[in-house]
Image (cartoon, rainbow, N blue to C red):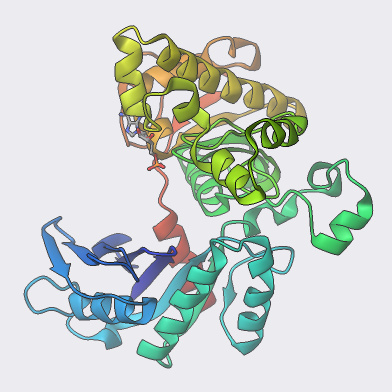
Length: 396
Ligand code: AMP
């Protein structure tokens, strides 16, 4: 059985075909610059060979058409016939309060998805465009929506309601939703396998540390607290996003810099975070290199990030009432041994005892703790596409 996983952005589309027997991607790729000049599809075979297809790609329907053609190409395709695709799983960023789990898409779901656009005006419209394009190009093939927010719908009101007049929650849906749910769910399930314990018995803190970064407290497989909020801007300082701030800073900067609402929004999302502090880059690899060469602001950006993550771990340990495991995932979490080591400093009081030799891993599923550590530290590469495919398989 093969499942096609689609992740549509406004001008990009990522895809993978996953063989559900081996759980491996047998073909994957990326369409870039949809609706712009210089559109391109970069396809990779299961063994990693690359094929670059340049074409005019004015919309998501044409993008999907080209992806499907690439998938059945006799030279570099992943499958012989599109009939081999049993179902399609779509990443959808925001499911609001309507969706607490993945759903099989029908007309009613499409209406509800459109109602969620207000909450994620930049992300949900391209997700919906991808679904409509697949419905056109692959009629009759079951499609599933998998939401970034769904995993966090188990949070209780005392963690998701903000200190605002309650009517704003009712009127505008302003509350904490949380994101990266597919990743937090996947790595927590893998952690239970790695620790050889039932997920239902575990208290875990999952640290998804990539360009976007969030932390999640997971009790018995359920999200009970997370660092991203109403939008993905909240929580940790990230590559280009500020993370949590004193809310008064927003209006203060708007006044001082004469920013419009749109300019302020763009500023907080694209000019702040590690990029803004370091002045070097939003990419943690570049920042680590610059810090190594003595760049003081690059060092400061790394120190802030490490301190932020440790603060959240400490507060989530309190919320959980103890921790069995801390999971590191995504670009920085999976690859940066030095960042993991820095974060784990001073966490001995919750039972962390990192094995520095074992911690030298990259992108491998490994318990990097010393044998007697009470709280295990786990490196678990995330695989959101596989999680989407598994949820799709379950539903169809
Ligand atoms: P993601 O959003 O999960 O793709 O993660 C991207 C981030 O991970 C970027 O900031 C990269 O610089 C960072 N990253 C990837 N590999 C490494 C590494 N070996 N050391 C430090 N950061 C890394």
